[in-house]
Amino acid sequence: MLQLIKKIVPRPVKERFYFTRWYRYYARYNTRKQANLNRIADIIESLENLNLREYLKQTVPLGDPTKPIPVPREIVLEINNTCNIDCAMCRTSLSTRPKGLMDPDLFESITDKLSKLRINISSLHTIGEPLANRNLADYLKILRKKKLRVGFLSSNFLLGEKQLDTIFEFRDVIVSIRPSIDAASKPTYEKIRCGGKWEQFQRSLLAFSKRNAASSSPFPVSVHSIVSQDNFHELAFIPLVFSYLTGPENFSFGFINSLAPQNEYFLEKNYLDDFSLNMPCHQLWGGFHILRDGSISACCRDYHGELIFGTVHEDLESAYNNSILGKMRNASFEGLAQELPPACNTCYLVDPRLSDLLNAIFGYFFLIVRKHPAYLQNALHDIGKSMKTKDFRSIVAIVQSL
Ligand code: SF4
Image (cartoon, rainbow, N blue to C red; front, side):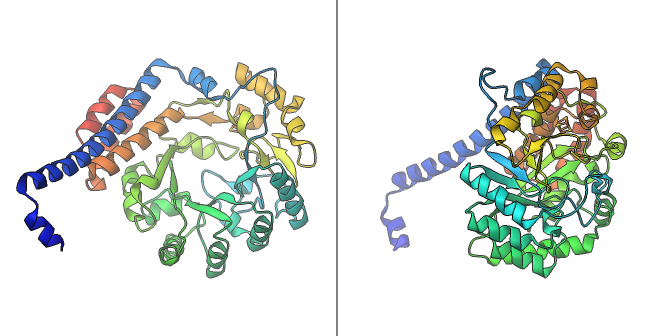
């Protein structure tokens, strides 16, 4: 039938149709191309014209000073502060908070409160690994009962069959999956993810991927990589090696910031030499982490409980506007590092716009340029040098030549 239609439609009409279709594709291609190059240009303009401190001040949601700061609509709930490995950048083992799992009754009463307040849970971990929690299914059962869903299950993804079964059994509760992948090769992986084995990691991801592909309701998957001197040489290959998990547009990258309390790995392996104290820190206005013992902390980087400002049994809005957090907010906004707890006055940050720039370059390369990642990796060496010397204009030229 189609062949018949093709034969009887006059040539000028066909040409017009093809032109329209071709033009539509071209326009879409061009829009995406411009959008990406424009995005890169916008980030560079901001980097050149606004210093980091002023930029951070703009990201803080100060709100109306005459009104209380609302409790975030998405919070983090820590079901365990333990992990099955001890990654170089996290060093969960250094946390001095008592280790363990959240009591299921406490979890039930917290989720009850959150459900009534219509507050969502963005993730189930701070410095622990929720997939290493032997009672994960029990917590997910409670979430299902309360009609709550968890934003994503971040993971180092060293899973056994039983944990995989749990994830797929609770597909209605878990919205998406986000494994952390910082390496495209065994030596790099095992250097960063101390205690993890590359072969086991690949096996877990492949088993997950196979089941996800066969599922009638597959999980959306995104991947995040922390960028350091240890992996910069193979960054562009990460989306290629793990292309069986998701498309390259779902990989994001962020330059390493302070995480482990002693900063050893950050100071040694930070790729960019330029970093500053994280002040003002938006976590103090937007962070709400319920820890495994029911206390509330401003931040996931609370290894020793220094940023606890209340407990979940209080009125949450009053707690979020109490004097403990108020003093921290004020000191952070005014840049008074000595008045902040040690966790904050040793918290270093690489300008987040540089991570935005890196992601825009990756997006442009994988969606528009679409060559083998070796081309991008080759360019990344020059891009990295330009980032270090703050010669941002030369980055535009490098990207255009890809
Ligand atoms: S430790 Fe303090 S400064 Fe660092 S991210 Fe957490 S709240 Fe912000």
